[in-house]
Image 1: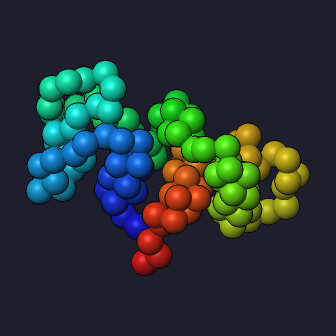
Image 2: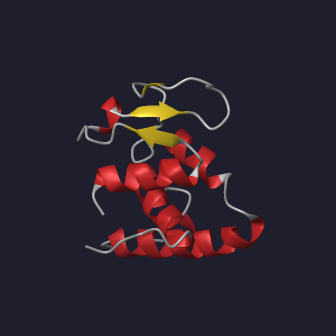
Length: 116
């Protein structure tokens, strides 16, 4: 998946409403926050940068239901293990996962990940 496709899929899974998708750069999308904003606005700082911001992914992870969380941990471990080139302590992979790794695991958990 492209980074833009990932951002859109996570935002929609977190109940953001998005329009003006003709803009290639996600920062120019118009978005509506699921709770806080009642009006449409230029995305700018409002749409979270899920692939680079651990805090944004932490908020997305909170959207997972209890029965999805075990699958998410499994997916996150697989994503991190795949990216790891040298031996690592297994318990160390998950706490040190990047925002991008968490985003991929999140999308895989929700069956939204599309292989290229």
